[in-house]
Image (cartoon, rainbow, N blue to C red; front, side, top):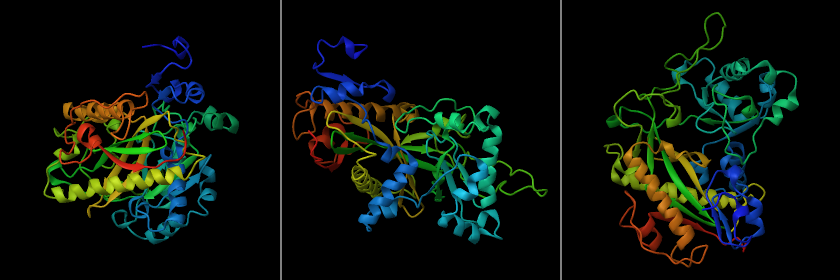
Length: 423
């Protein structure tokens, strides 16, 4: 163990670093591609930043119109806003939104088409809001701006823009408010998809957290044990509670987002004794029988494969190199018909979301598999440092029926093996 690359016996010594993005010595990686290995690609915003991801998917669908991405990635409207007063101008070409607003005119909240707003540069569910009318969307931005210190929302545009974090950074500090000024610029809006609800779990909304390993240039694996992250409160249809403007034209009452947010990092206390994080394979419900669960996982495998193939087609914004690997946390929603929808791709996922002992076992098994594949190989050859694959135990819910060395030993399902010609 060394504290800095300066302590290497020689610059060409075999070297592995697992740390935060900001701490990785990328110059060392580029200078010594055959001996230096780290746990992050230099550039991967084609996946991890929501407006880039929208562009990645749209570009791929132009070329492959019948791709799985059309069915499993929600329609996404992305726009750029510096200040609330420019919102209407930013939405001039947001045709899907404007048409939805027109269809919602005269309808009560429970019968409208609802949209979910996500700041592109935020993580952990920060800043997510629901809206169904143009006025509701304006109120969201106006309220955010009113909450910011004057020094950040004044006329000093350069100061505000300089605070926007690097698109590859994982820094999400200063999260005391619902949104921070450095995130006020790029946004995406998507149709709000009603979730599959399980009565055995108090009809709480849940999403699936999948861990995906990308190695070199490029092999992609989905870790078969997955997690189900449940909302803090039972689900309520948007618009059924506190969703309208006050009668005197005042500010819109805040919507309670707890039934809609499944990010465990935003949950203060659970409203029930049921855990908010469970291994997906442990969910027992008549509405999620084994055949449907098998279909869900198959959809995740195929869509993940296509998603990374689409990212590779964006070489400016996704650059996998042979001497790097990365673990992504990919989130999926299951609708009442059993169809899987991509929510987002997270770099440096928060493993604290793994919850109690069973969830921690999933993360432990994940990292056994990650290091097993990266250091010992995947059965097709040696690992990065020339180490041959050894013995291992399989993680819980790993699927013992799986065929293939990687699946049997590490619980990793290979979904993409694409030679990009980088050596």
